[in-house]
Image (cartoon, rainbow, N blue to C red):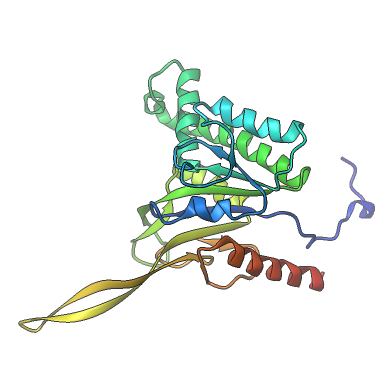
Length: 255
C-alpha cells in the first residue's frame, strides 16, 4: 500500500458503536439489547421467549453463527442493530468446532493450550463479520455476556477479586480490545456495619433494587468506554443511548 499525505483521514468520525454488556444472571441484559434501534438477535442460548424481538433460530454450531452474520451482510433488511446473545455460549460452540477439528471430545484434550489459541482465530472470524456489518452496513453491534468473579493480579497492589467477562482469558482480551464500550451491569449496592454484640460488627450489603451499568473500570469490575460517559447509568438502553449520543456529538463538534 502506497502511503502519502493524500492518504490521511480525519479521525473522530462517528460510526455505530461496538458494545459489550456483561453482568450477573437475570440482571436484564437481553431486555437492554431489545430496546436498541431495530435489533435482530443471533441467539446461542435460550432466553428470548419473554421478549418480543426479531431473532434467528437458535444457533447450535459455530457455522450457524457465521451463517447468520453472512445473511445480514448479503440480504437486504430493515435491522439497525445486531445482538449476539450470548458471547459465553458462543464460546462453547467455538470450542466444539476446535475439538471437532482435532478429532477429540473436548478442547481440553488438545495439549499445550493449542486448542484455546485456535479458538481465538475462530472468534476473530466472528468479530470480523460483525465489523463488516458495522462498517459497511451501518449496524450497531451488541455482544451480551455473563460475568464471573475472578482474581485479578494487579502489579501495583495486592491481588483482589473482581467481576470480569465469563470467557477464556485470551478471548476476553481480544473482545475487550475490539469493543468501543465495555459495560458491567449489576444491582446498585452499598454496605453498612451493624453491631452484633461483644464489641463485634458485621458488614451487610443493602440495596433498593436499582439496576445500573458501570462504564469505567474500578477495582470491583472491568469496564471501558472510548467516549466520555457518566460512570454510572440506569440499565436502560434509551438512557444509555442518549448519553452515548451526547458524548459522540461532543467529539464531532471538537473534530
